[in-house]
Length: 486
Length: 89
Image (cartoon, rainbow over all chains, first blue to last red; front, side, top):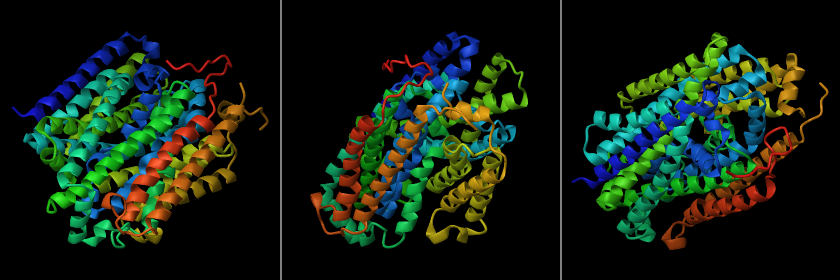
Protein backbone atom coordinates (compact mmCIF):
# COMPACT_ATOMS: atom_id res chain seq x y z
CA UNK A 1 0.00 0.00 0.00
CA UNK A 2 1.36 3.44 -0.93
CA UNK A 3 1.03 5.45 2.30
CA UNK A 4 1.76 8.70 0.50
CA UNK A 5 -1.36 8.18 -1.61
CA UNK A 6 -3.44 7.10 1.39
CA UNK A 7 -2.57 10.15 3.51
CA UNK A 8 -3.02 12.48 0.55
CA UNK A 9 -6.43 11.01 -0.27
CA UNK A 10 -7.46 11.41 3.39
CA UNK A 11 -6.53 15.10 3.23
CA UNK A 12 -8.46 15.49 -0.04
CA UNK A 13 -11.51 13.83 1.53
CA UNK A 14 -11.47 16.35 4.38
CA UNK A 15 -11.44 19.24 1.89
CA UNK A 16 -14.42 17.83 0.01
CA UNK A 17 -16.31 17.44 3.31
CA UNK A 18 -15.55 21.10 4.08
CA UNK A 19 -16.96 22.11 0.70
CA UNK A 20 -20.22 20.24 1.31
CA UNK A 21 -20.53 21.58 4.88
CA UNK A 22 -19.89 25.17 3.74
CA UNK A 23 -22.41 24.78 0.95
CA UNK A 24 -25.10 23.96 3.51
CA UNK A 25 -24.23 27.08 5.53
CA UNK A 26 -24.16 29.38 2.50
CA UNK A 27 -27.46 27.96 1.25
CA UNK A 28 -29.16 28.82 4.55
CA UNK A 29 -28.18 32.49 4.25
CA UNK A 30 -31.00 34.77 2.98
CA UNK A 31 -30.52 35.75 -0.66
CA UNK A 32 -30.07 39.43 0.31
CA UNK A 33 -27.00 38.53 2.37
CA UNK A 34 -25.70 35.90 -0.02
CA UNK A 35 -22.88 37.99 -1.56
CA UNK A 36 -21.67 39.12 1.85
CA UNK A 37 -21.45 35.48 2.94
CA UNK A 38 -20.10 34.02 -0.30
CA UNK A 39 -17.38 36.64 -0.91
CA UNK A 40 -16.57 38.00 2.56
CA UNK A 41 -17.62 35.16 4.91
CA UNK A 42 -19.92 37.57 6.74
CA UNK A 43 -16.91 39.85 7.50
CA UNK A 44 -16.27 37.95 10.72
CA UNK A 45 -12.89 36.22 10.29
CA UNK A 46 -10.41 36.16 13.17
CA UNK A 47 -6.66 36.81 13.14
CA UNK A 48 -5.45 33.28 12.48
CA UNK A 49 -7.69 32.78 9.45
CA UNK A 50 -6.91 36.26 8.09
CA UNK A 51 -3.19 35.53 8.49
CA UNK A 52 -3.57 32.26 6.62
CA UNK A 53 -5.78 33.65 3.86
CA UNK A 54 -3.29 36.38 2.99
CA UNK A 55 -0.14 34.32 3.58
CA UNK A 56 -1.56 31.24 1.88
CA UNK A 57 -2.97 33.31 -0.97
CA UNK A 58 0.29 35.10 -1.70
CA UNK A 59 2.66 32.21 -1.02
CA UNK A 60 1.94 30.13 -4.10
CA UNK A 61 3.65 27.42 -6.12
CA UNK A 62 6.36 30.10 -6.38
CA UNK A 63 7.14 29.46 -2.71
CA UNK A 64 6.37 25.78 -2.38
CA UNK A 65 7.79 24.37 -5.62
CA UNK A 66 9.67 27.04 -7.54
CA UNK A 67 11.20 28.42 -4.30
CA UNK A 68 13.18 25.27 -3.51
CA UNK A 69 13.63 24.79 -7.26
CA UNK A 70 15.31 28.19 -7.62
CA UNK A 71 17.52 27.65 -4.57
CA UNK A 72 18.44 24.26 -6.00
CA UNK A 73 19.44 25.96 -9.25
CA UNK A 74 20.99 29.17 -7.87
CA UNK A 75 22.08 28.38 -4.33
CA UNK A 76 21.71 30.60 -1.29
CA UNK A 77 21.31 33.78 -3.40
CA UNK A 78 17.68 32.84 -4.04
CA UNK A 79 17.03 32.21 -0.35
CA UNK A 80 17.90 35.88 0.13
CA UNK A 81 15.50 36.93 -2.65
CA UNK A 82 12.68 34.78 -1.28
CA UNK A 83 13.21 36.23 2.19
CA UNK A 84 11.97 39.59 0.88
CA UNK A 85 8.42 38.22 0.88
CA UNK A 86 8.27 37.45 4.61
CA UNK A 87 6.42 40.65 5.51
CA UNK A 88 3.67 40.43 2.87
CA UNK A 89 0.90 40.42 5.48
CA UNK A 90 2.34 43.52 7.13
CA UNK A 91 2.70 45.36 3.84
CA UNK A 92 -0.85 44.57 2.83
CA UNK A 93 -2.84 44.81 6.05
CA UNK A 94 -0.98 47.70 7.69
CA UNK A 95 -1.10 50.23 4.81
CA UNK A 96 -4.68 49.68 3.69
CA UNK A 97 -6.28 47.27 6.14
CA UNK A 98 -7.93 49.84 8.40
CA UNK A 99 -9.10 52.23 5.70
CA UNK A 100 -10.44 49.38 3.53
CA UNK A 101 -12.14 47.87 6.58
CA UNK A 102 -13.88 51.15 7.44
CA UNK A 103 -14.91 52.03 3.88
CA UNK A 104 -16.04 48.46 3.14
CA UNK A 105 -18.47 48.68 6.06
CA UNK A 106 -19.65 52.14 4.98
CA UNK A 107 -20.43 51.22 1.39
CA UNK A 108 -21.12 47.53 2.08
CA UNK A 109 -18.23 46.45 -0.16
CA UNK A 110 -17.75 42.69 -0.29
CA UNK A 111 -15.48 42.45 -3.31
CA UNK A 112 -12.16 43.93 -4.34
CA UNK A 113 -13.70 46.02 -7.12
CA UNK A 114 -16.44 47.37 -4.83
CA UNK A 115 -13.72 49.52 -3.24
CA UNK A 116 -12.64 50.83 -6.66
CA UNK A 117 -16.29 51.43 -7.55
CA UNK A 118 -16.86 53.51 -4.44
CA UNK A 119 -13.62 55.46 -4.83
CA UNK A 120 -13.71 56.26 -8.54
CA UNK A 121 -17.40 55.78 -9.46
CA UNK A 122 -16.34 54.80 -12.95
CA UNK A 123 -17.71 51.99 -15.07
CA UNK A 124 -14.59 52.15 -17.27
CA UNK A 125 -12.28 51.35 -14.35
CA UNK A 126 -14.37 48.33 -13.35
CA UNK A 127 -14.32 47.00 -16.92
CA UNK A 128 -10.59 47.64 -17.40
CA UNK A 129 -9.61 46.11 -14.08
CA UNK A 130 -11.86 43.08 -14.58
CA UNK A 131 -10.12 42.42 -17.89
CA UNK A 132 -6.57 42.83 -16.54
CA UNK A 133 -7.22 40.95 -13.30
CA UNK A 134 -8.68 38.04 -15.27
CA UNK A 135 -5.94 38.11 -17.92
CA UNK A 136 -3.14 37.99 -15.33
CA UNK A 137 -4.77 35.72 -12.77
CA UNK A 138 -5.86 32.92 -15.13
CA UNK A 139 -2.33 31.95 -16.25
CA UNK A 140 -1.19 32.44 -12.65
CA UNK A 141 -3.86 29.95 -11.55
CA UNK A 142 -2.83 27.58 -14.33
CA UNK A 143 0.78 27.55 -13.07
CA UNK A 144 -0.53 26.56 -9.65
CA UNK A 145 -2.39 23.60 -11.12
CA UNK A 146 0.70 22.60 -13.11
CA UNK A 147 2.82 22.73 -9.97
CA UNK A 148 0.35 20.68 -7.95
CA UNK A 149 -0.07 18.10 -10.71
CA UNK A 150 3.69 17.67 -11.08
CA UNK A 151 4.17 17.11 -7.38
CA UNK A 152 1.32 14.61 -7.14
CA UNK A 153 2.46 12.77 -10.26
CA UNK A 154 6.05 12.60 -9.09
CA UNK A 155 5.18 11.33 -5.63
CA UNK A 156 2.35 8.93 -6.37
CA UNK A 157 3.32 7.62 -9.76
CA UNK A 158 -0.06 8.59 -11.20
CA UNK A 159 -0.21 10.17 -14.66
CA UNK A 160 -0.13 13.95 -15.13
CA UNK A 161 -3.81 14.16 -16.13
CA UNK A 162 -4.99 12.08 -13.17
CA UNK A 163 -2.82 14.15 -10.85
CA UNK A 164 -4.13 17.38 -12.36
CA UNK A 165 -7.70 16.21 -11.84
CA UNK A 166 -7.06 15.17 -8.23
CA UNK A 167 -5.26 18.38 -7.30
CA UNK A 168 -7.65 20.78 -9.01
CA UNK A 169 -11.15 19.30 -8.82
CA UNK A 170 -11.15 19.37 -5.04
CA UNK A 171 -10.54 23.15 -5.16
CA UNK A 172 -13.42 23.41 -7.59
CA UNK A 173 -15.67 21.63 -5.10
CA UNK A 174 -15.00 23.69 -1.99
CA UNK A 175 -14.71 27.04 -3.80
CA UNK A 176 -17.81 26.72 -5.93
CA UNK A 177 -19.92 25.23 -3.19
CA UNK A 178 -18.67 27.10 -0.16
CA UNK A 179 -17.30 30.40 -1.49
CA UNK A 180 -15.23 32.36 1.02
CA UNK A 181 -16.76 30.42 3.93
CA UNK A 182 -15.49 27.12 2.53
CA UNK A 183 -12.20 28.68 1.48
CA UNK A 184 -11.51 30.12 4.93
CA UNK A 185 -12.12 26.84 6.74
CA UNK A 186 -10.12 24.87 4.20
CA UNK A 187 -7.31 27.42 4.49
CA UNK A 188 -7.16 26.94 8.26
CA UNK A 189 -6.65 23.19 7.87
CA UNK A 190 -4.30 23.67 4.92
CA UNK A 191 -2.18 26.14 6.94
CA UNK A 192 -1.55 23.47 9.57
CA UNK A 193 -0.76 20.85 6.92
CA UNK A 194 1.60 23.21 5.07
CA UNK A 195 3.52 24.12 8.22
CA UNK A 196 3.88 20.52 9.41
CA UNK A 197 4.91 19.45 5.89
CA UNK A 198 7.61 22.15 5.69
CA UNK A 199 9.08 21.25 9.08
CA UNK A 200 9.13 17.53 8.26
CA UNK A 201 10.81 18.13 4.89
CA UNK A 202 13.45 20.49 6.31
CA UNK A 203 14.39 18.31 9.28
CA UNK A 204 14.46 15.20 7.11
CA UNK A 205 16.68 16.91 4.53
CA UNK A 206 19.20 18.27 7.05
CA UNK A 207 19.49 14.92 8.83
CA UNK A 208 19.80 13.01 5.55
CA UNK A 209 22.49 15.40 4.30
CA UNK A 210 24.54 14.98 7.48
CA UNK A 211 24.15 18.58 8.64
CA UNK A 212 24.73 22.07 7.26
CA UNK A 213 28.52 21.90 7.37
CA UNK A 214 28.72 18.77 5.23
CA UNK A 215 26.24 20.08 2.66
CA UNK A 216 28.08 23.44 2.52
CA UNK A 217 31.36 21.67 1.81
CA UNK A 218 29.76 19.62 -0.99
CA UNK A 219 28.14 22.74 -2.50
CA UNK A 220 31.51 24.56 -2.39
CA UNK A 221 33.10 21.65 -4.24
CA UNK A 222 30.34 21.73 -6.90
CA UNK A 223 30.41 25.50 -7.51
CA UNK A 224 31.41 28.26 -5.08
CA UNK A 225 28.76 30.53 -6.67
CA UNK A 226 26.10 28.54 -4.79
CA UNK A 227 27.47 30.15 -1.64
CA UNK A 228 27.51 33.69 -3.08
CA UNK A 229 24.77 36.26 -2.27
CA UNK A 230 24.63 37.27 -5.95
CA UNK A 231 25.27 33.83 -7.51
CA UNK A 232 28.59 35.16 -8.75
CA UNK A 233 27.01 38.34 -10.17
CA UNK A 234 23.99 36.71 -11.85
CA UNK A 235 21.61 38.51 -9.47
CA UNK A 236 23.10 41.93 -8.72
CA UNK A 237 21.80 43.97 -5.74
CA UNK A 238 19.62 46.20 -7.96
CA UNK A 239 17.79 43.19 -9.42
CA UNK A 240 17.29 41.84 -5.91
CA UNK A 241 16.00 45.22 -4.77
CA UNK A 242 13.44 45.36 -7.61
CA UNK A 243 12.12 41.93 -6.57
CA UNK A 244 12.00 43.18 -2.97
CA UNK A 245 9.75 46.00 -4.22
CA UNK A 246 7.60 43.55 -6.20
CA UNK A 247 6.97 41.25 -3.24
CA UNK A 248 7.21 44.05 -0.67
CA UNK A 249 6.04 47.63 -1.19
CA UNK A 250 4.05 46.87 -4.36
CA UNK A 251 2.22 43.87 -2.90
CA UNK A 252 -0.49 46.19 -1.67
CA UNK A 253 -1.89 46.07 -5.19
CA UNK A 254 -2.36 42.30 -5.32
CA UNK A 255 -6.11 41.69 -5.71
CA UNK A 256 -6.33 38.24 -4.15
CA UNK A 257 -4.42 39.48 -1.13
CA UNK A 258 -7.12 42.11 -0.59
CA UNK A 259 -9.46 39.34 0.59
CA UNK A 260 -7.96 39.51 4.06
CA UNK A 261 -8.52 43.27 4.26
CA UNK A 262 -12.17 42.80 3.30
CA UNK A 263 -12.93 39.94 5.64
CA UNK A 264 -11.19 40.59 8.98
CA UNK A 265 -13.44 41.15 11.96
CA UNK A 266 -11.68 43.88 13.96
CA UNK A 267 -8.29 45.50 14.50
CA UNK A 268 -7.26 42.79 16.95
CA UNK A 269 -7.70 40.26 14.15
CA UNK A 270 -5.80 42.60 11.83
CA UNK A 271 -2.80 42.80 14.18
CA UNK A 272 -2.72 39.06 14.67
CA UNK A 273 -3.04 38.60 10.93
CA UNK A 274 0.05 40.77 10.48
CA UNK A 275 2.47 39.06 12.85
CA UNK A 276 1.12 35.52 12.55
CA UNK A 277 1.37 35.87 8.78
CA UNK A 278 5.04 36.87 9.10
CA UNK A 279 5.80 33.84 11.27
CA UNK A 280 4.07 31.50 8.82
CA UNK A 281 5.68 32.91 5.68
CA UNK A 282 9.09 32.91 7.39
CA UNK A 283 8.68 29.23 8.28
CA UNK A 284 7.43 28.19 4.85
CA UNK A 285 9.96 30.24 2.89
CA UNK A 286 13.07 29.61 4.93
CA UNK A 287 12.55 25.90 5.55
CA UNK A 288 11.67 25.02 1.95
CA UNK A 289 14.32 27.23 0.37
CA UNK A 290 17.05 25.95 2.68
CA UNK A 291 15.92 22.39 1.92
CA UNK A 292 16.23 23.18 -1.80
CA UNK A 293 19.88 24.28 -1.50
CA UNK A 294 20.82 21.38 0.74
CA UNK A 295 19.05 19.10 -1.73
CA UNK A 296 21.62 20.18 -4.33
CA UNK A 297 24.31 18.55 -2.22
CA UNK A 298 22.32 15.29 -2.23
CA UNK A 299 21.29 15.11 -5.89
CA UNK A 300 23.18 17.51 -8.16
CA UNK A 301 21.76 16.39 -11.49
CA UNK A 302 17.98 16.86 -11.50
CA UNK A 303 16.88 17.81 -15.03
CA UNK A 304 14.00 19.95 -13.72
CA UNK A 305 15.04 21.95 -10.61
CA UNK A 306 11.37 22.42 -9.60
CA UNK A 307 11.24 18.70 -8.83
CA UNK A 308 13.61 18.97 -5.88
CA UNK A 309 10.84 19.33 -3.26
CA UNK A 310 8.97 16.17 -4.31
CA UNK A 311 12.30 14.37 -4.74
CA UNK A 312 13.25 15.20 -1.17
CA UNK A 313 9.80 14.22 0.10
CA UNK A 314 10.22 10.83 -1.55
CA UNK A 315 13.78 10.15 -0.46
CA UNK A 316 14.56 11.83 2.85
CA UNK A 317 11.41 11.26 4.91
CA UNK A 318 9.42 8.07 5.68
CA UNK A 319 6.66 7.25 3.18
CA UNK A 320 3.71 8.21 5.38
CA UNK A 321 5.33 11.52 6.32
CA UNK A 322 6.08 12.02 2.62
CA UNK A 323 2.31 12.02 2.11
CA UNK A 324 2.00 14.87 4.62
CA UNK A 325 4.70 16.83 2.81
CA UNK A 326 2.88 16.20 -0.47
CA UNK A 327 -0.40 17.36 1.04
CA UNK A 328 1.40 20.41 2.49
CA UNK A 329 2.85 21.48 -0.85
CA UNK A 330 -0.43 20.93 -2.68
CA UNK A 331 -2.31 22.72 0.13
CA UNK A 332 -0.07 25.76 -0.28
CA UNK A 333 -0.97 25.84 -3.96
CA UNK A 334 -4.68 25.25 -3.39
CA UNK A 335 -4.97 28.21 -0.99
CA UNK A 336 -3.62 30.48 -3.70
CA UNK A 337 -5.97 29.11 -6.33
CA UNK A 338 -8.96 29.49 -4.01
CA UNK A 339 -8.14 33.15 -3.27
CA UNK A 340 -7.68 33.86 -6.99
CA UNK A 341 -10.94 32.10 -7.86
CA UNK A 342 -12.84 34.28 -5.38
CA UNK A 343 -11.31 37.44 -6.86
CA UNK A 344 -11.97 36.62 -10.51
CA UNK A 345 -15.50 35.46 -9.76
CA UNK A 346 -16.37 38.53 -7.72
CA UNK A 347 -14.94 40.79 -10.44
CA UNK A 348 -16.98 39.20 -13.22
CA UNK A 349 -20.13 37.81 -11.59
CA UNK A 350 -20.71 40.62 -9.13
CA UNK A 351 -19.03 43.87 -10.24
CA UNK A 352 -18.97 43.57 -14.02
CA UNK A 353 -22.45 42.05 -14.18
CA UNK A 354 -23.91 44.85 -12.05
CA UNK A 355 -22.16 47.51 -14.14
CA UNK A 356 -23.54 46.10 -17.36
CA UNK A 357 -26.95 45.18 -15.93
CA UNK A 358 -27.70 47.33 -12.86
CA UNK A 359 -31.12 45.77 -12.21
CA UNK A 360 -29.86 42.18 -12.08
CA UNK A 361 -31.52 40.14 -9.33
CA UNK A 362 -29.65 38.67 -6.34
CA UNK A 363 -30.70 35.19 -7.49
CA UNK A 364 -29.02 35.73 -10.86
CA UNK A 365 -25.85 37.03 -9.18
CA UNK A 366 -25.79 33.89 -7.04
CA UNK A 367 -26.12 31.66 -10.09
CA UNK A 368 -23.57 33.70 -12.01
CA UNK A 369 -21.09 33.51 -9.11
CA UNK A 370 -21.01 29.73 -9.11
CA UNK A 371 -21.07 29.47 -12.89
CA UNK A 372 -18.21 31.96 -13.29
CA UNK A 373 -16.10 30.30 -10.63
CA UNK A 374 -16.57 26.91 -12.22
CA UNK A 375 -15.77 28.31 -15.67
CA UNK A 376 -12.61 30.14 -14.49
CA UNK A 377 -11.24 27.08 -12.74
CA UNK A 378 -12.05 24.95 -15.78
CA UNK A 379 -10.20 27.40 -18.08
CA UNK A 380 -7.19 27.45 -15.75
CA UNK A 381 -7.18 23.65 -15.65
CA UNK A 382 -7.35 23.74 -19.46
CA UNK A 383 -4.25 26.00 -19.57
CA UNK A 384 -2.52 23.59 -17.20
CA UNK A 385 -2.84 20.85 -19.83
CA UNK A 386 -0.24 22.80 -21.85
CA UNK A 387 2.34 22.03 -19.11
CA UNK A 388 4.61 25.12 -19.27
CA UNK A 389 8.16 24.36 -18.09
CA UNK A 390 9.24 27.56 -16.32
CA UNK A 391 6.40 28.40 -13.96
CA UNK A 392 8.45 30.79 -11.77
CA UNK A 393 8.81 33.34 -14.56
CA UNK A 394 5.10 33.11 -15.43
CA UNK A 395 4.33 33.75 -11.75
CA UNK A 396 6.60 36.81 -11.66
CA UNK A 397 5.07 38.03 -14.93
CA UNK A 398 1.54 37.75 -13.51
CA UNK A 399 2.41 39.39 -10.19
CA UNK A 400 4.18 42.21 -12.04
CA UNK A 401 1.17 42.81 -14.28
CA UNK A 402 -1.28 42.80 -11.38
CA UNK A 403 0.67 45.25 -9.22
CA UNK A 404 1.36 47.49 -12.21
CA UNK A 405 -2.38 47.77 -12.85
CA UNK A 406 -3.46 48.26 -9.26
CA UNK A 407 -0.70 49.70 -7.06
CA UNK A 408 -1.21 53.40 -7.89
CA UNK A 409 -5.02 53.40 -8.06
CA UNK A 410 -5.42 51.50 -4.78
CA UNK A 411 -2.71 53.14 -2.66
CA UNK A 412 -3.02 56.73 -3.91
CA UNK A 413 -6.78 56.30 -4.20
CA UNK A 414 -6.98 55.52 -0.50
CA UNK A 415 -4.52 58.11 0.78
CA UNK A 416 -4.57 61.04 -1.68
CA UNK A 417 -7.83 62.96 -1.75
CA UNK A 418 -6.95 64.66 -5.03
CA UNK A 419 -6.64 61.38 -6.96
CA UNK A 420 -9.47 60.80 -9.44
CA UNK A 421 -10.81 58.39 -12.05
CA UNK A 422 -8.86 60.00 -14.90
CA UNK A 423 -5.61 59.57 -13.03
CA UNK A 424 -6.50 55.94 -12.28
CA UNK A 425 -7.42 55.11 -15.88
CA UNK A 426 -4.31 56.82 -17.27
CA UNK A 427 -2.14 55.10 -14.67
CA UNK A 428 -3.50 51.62 -15.46
CA UNK A 429 -3.21 52.07 -19.23
CA UNK A 430 0.27 53.63 -19.06
CA UNK A 431 1.50 50.93 -16.70
CA UNK A 432 0.21 48.14 -18.94
CA UNK A 433 1.85 49.63 -22.03
CA UNK A 434 5.22 50.08 -20.29
CA UNK A 435 5.02 46.61 -18.73
CA UNK A 436 4.12 45.05 -22.06
CA UNK A 437 6.95 46.79 -23.90
CA UNK A 438 9.53 46.06 -21.20
CA UNK A 439 8.61 42.37 -21.34
CA UNK A 440 8.73 42.11 -25.13
CA UNK A 441 10.28 44.44 -27.69
CA UNK A 442 11.96 47.05 -25.46
CA UNK A 443 13.62 45.09 -22.62
CA UNK A 444 16.08 47.93 -22.08
CA UNK A 445 13.20 49.82 -20.43
CA UNK A 446 13.92 47.69 -17.38
CA UNK A 447 16.49 50.13 -16.04
CA UNK A 448 19.61 49.01 -14.17
CA UNK A 449 18.76 45.35 -14.59
CA UNK A 450 15.55 45.61 -12.58
CA UNK A 451 12.41 43.51 -13.05
CA UNK A 452 10.10 45.10 -15.72
CA UNK A 453 7.44 45.79 -13.08
CA UNK A 454 9.74 48.23 -11.27
CA UNK A 455 9.77 50.91 -13.97
CA UNK A 456 6.14 50.19 -14.91
CA UNK A 457 4.85 50.72 -11.36
CA UNK A 458 6.98 53.79 -10.60
CA UNK A 459 6.07 55.49 -13.89
CA UNK A 460 2.37 54.64 -13.55
CA UNK A 461 2.32 56.28 -10.12
CA UNK A 462 3.83 59.43 -11.65
CA UNK A 463 1.19 59.36 -14.41
CA UNK A 464 -1.56 58.97 -11.78
CA UNK A 465 -0.36 62.09 -9.95
CA UNK A 466 0.12 64.19 -13.09
CA UNK A 467 -3.23 63.33 -14.69
CA UNK A 468 -5.19 63.65 -11.43
CA UNK A 469 -3.61 67.04 -10.78
CA UNK A 470 -4.55 68.26 -14.27
CA UNK A 471 -8.20 67.13 -14.09
CA UNK A 472 -11.11 68.00 -11.74
CA UNK A 473 -10.94 66.62 -8.19
CA UNK A 474 -13.30 63.84 -7.06
CA UNK A 475 -16.68 64.77 -5.62
CA UNK A 476 -17.21 65.81 -2.03
CA UNK A 477 -19.37 62.72 -1.55
CA UNK A 478 -16.40 60.47 -2.33
CA UNK A 479 -14.18 62.43 0.05
CA UNK A 480 -16.72 62.14 2.87
CA UNK A 481 -17.19 58.42 2.24
CA UNK A 482 -13.48 57.68 2.36
CA UNK A 483 -12.07 60.18 4.84
CA UNK A 484 -14.97 62.05 6.44
CA UNK A 485 -16.34 61.71 9.93
CA UNK A 486 -19.83 60.22 10.11
CA UNK B 1 -13.69 70.38 -0.06
CA UNK B 2 -14.39 71.00 3.61
CA UNK B 3 -15.30 68.23 6.02
CA UNK B 4 -14.23 66.88 9.38
CA UNK B 5 -11.71 64.13 8.84
CA UNK B 6 -12.35 60.83 10.54
CA UNK B 7 -9.57 60.51 13.19
CA UNK B 8 -9.09 56.87 12.19
CA UNK B 9 -7.66 58.05 8.87
CA UNK B 10 -4.74 59.65 10.68
CA UNK B 11 -4.18 56.31 12.41
CA UNK B 12 -4.28 54.60 9.02
CA UNK B 13 -1.63 56.97 7.60
CA UNK B 14 0.63 56.42 10.60
CA UNK B 15 0.37 52.66 10.22
CA UNK B 16 1.25 52.94 6.53
CA UNK B 17 4.36 54.92 7.46
CA UNK B 18 5.20 52.45 10.22
CA UNK B 19 4.88 49.43 7.91
CA UNK B 20 7.04 50.94 5.17
CA UNK B 21 9.64 52.12 7.67
CA UNK B 22 9.78 48.66 9.24
CA UNK B 23 10.18 46.96 5.84
CA UNK B 24 12.80 49.51 4.74
CA UNK B 25 14.85 48.82 7.87
CA UNK B 26 14.50 45.08 7.23
CA UNK B 27 15.63 45.49 3.62
CA UNK B 28 18.58 47.64 4.66
CA UNK B 29 19.61 45.09 7.29
CA UNK B 30 19.18 41.97 5.19
CA UNK B 31 20.79 43.38 2.04
CA UNK B 32 23.44 45.42 3.82
CA UNK B 33 24.63 42.49 5.90
CA UNK B 34 24.27 39.83 3.20
CA UNK B 35 26.44 41.72 0.73
CA UNK B 36 29.15 42.71 3.22
CA UNK B 37 29.86 40.08 5.88
CA UNK B 38 31.53 37.51 3.64
CA UNK B 39 31.24 33.78 3.02
CA UNK B 40 33.53 32.32 5.70
CA UNK B 41 32.02 29.44 7.70
CA UNK B 42 30.00 30.71 10.65
CA UNK B 43 26.95 29.24 12.40
CA UNK B 44 26.75 25.40 11.99
CA UNK B 45 29.24 25.69 9.17
CA UNK B 46 26.95 27.87 7.03
CA UNK B 47 28.53 30.82 5.17
CA UNK B 48 28.54 33.90 7.41
CA UNK B 49 26.18 35.91 5.15
CA UNK B 50 23.70 33.02 4.98
CA UNK B 51 23.60 32.56 8.75
CA UNK B 52 23.27 36.29 9.44
CA UNK B 53 21.36 37.62 6.41
CA UNK B 54 19.13 34.64 5.66
CA UNK B 55 18.42 33.28 9.14
CA UNK B 56 19.27 35.56 12.07
CA UNK B 57 18.04 38.89 10.61
CA UNK B 58 14.66 37.54 9.36
CA UNK B 59 13.98 35.75 12.65
CA UNK B 60 14.89 38.84 14.70
CA UNK B 61 12.67 41.09 12.57
CA UNK B 62 9.71 38.69 12.74
CA UNK B 63 9.99 38.61 16.54
CA UNK B 64 10.32 42.40 16.54
CA UNK B 65 7.16 42.65 14.43
CA UNK B 66 5.08 40.95 17.14
CA UNK B 67 6.06 43.73 19.54
CA UNK B 68 5.68 46.51 16.95
CA UNK B 69 2.23 45.38 15.77
CA UNK B 70 0.82 44.88 19.26
CA UNK B 71 2.41 48.06 20.65
CA UNK B 72 2.04 50.58 17.83
CA UNK B 73 -1.15 49.60 16.01
CA UNK B 74 -4.03 50.87 18.15
CA UNK B 75 -7.41 49.17 18.43
CA UNK B 76 -9.87 51.32 16.53
CA UNK B 77 -13.60 50.67 16.08
CA UNK B 78 -14.46 49.48 12.58
CA UNK B 79 -18.08 50.60 12.67
CA UNK B 80 -19.35 54.18 12.91
CA UNK B 81 -20.79 53.99 16.42
CA UNK B 82 -18.17 54.17 19.16
CA UNK B 83 -19.78 51.32 21.03
CA UNK B 84 -17.83 48.71 19.05
CA UNK B 85 -16.18 46.68 21.77
CA UNK B 86 -13.67 45.00 19.45
CA UNK B 87 -14.27 41.68 21.14
CA UNK B 88 -12.64 38.69 19.48
CA UNK B 89 -15.06 35.99 18.55
